[in-house]
Length: 212
Ligand code: FES
Ligand code: FES
Image 1 (tube, helix red, strand yellow):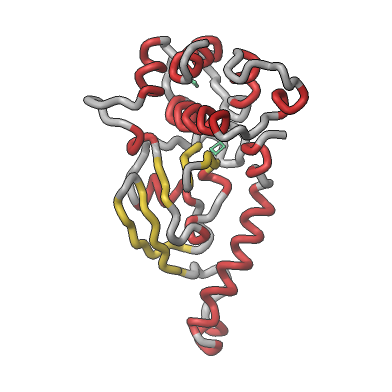
Image 2: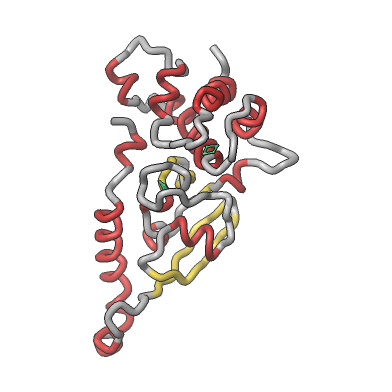
């Protein structure tokens, strides 16, 4: 079980916990009379502020809205993709306070003060992030739908290796070179590619990490 896997909770558990905590934070500010008057199922709005790609955003969000939907639908940052919307494909991977996370598995209202980086914030067409450049060089994609999540995940993988965060494989195989193809495959296993560009993705991550 690696750090990324630890972050994964079932969508049901996260939504349930988030709904309870968010509701507890917001409903008292409405006043008991207002809360009682609110029709069942009506949205509860809350303000949240966080930085996205270096720009502070203050938003009023429905407390049930995932971070993925806020990024795509309120901030129009559609580079982050929605594949399964259930924490199974990795298409929605972003960096939150430097760690990778599935944006479909977390509620936006839970991230007051967070620093969020999406694929749009990693590089620009004129100044690509080294991981973006490596994906292009090695054809680490076909249709490209999974690619933003793959790249964000890969950036975090290199950081995890640098910080000595063990993966499931490296914890049991102490002598395993950290940037071996097996190790990269293990650490990237939460990102699914329906086009099957896996071998080229491993090549790209290997190069961006400094080919041994
Ligand atoms: Fe989030 Fe698939 S869309 S993991
Ligand atoms: Fe098409 Fe990965 S490039 S799903």
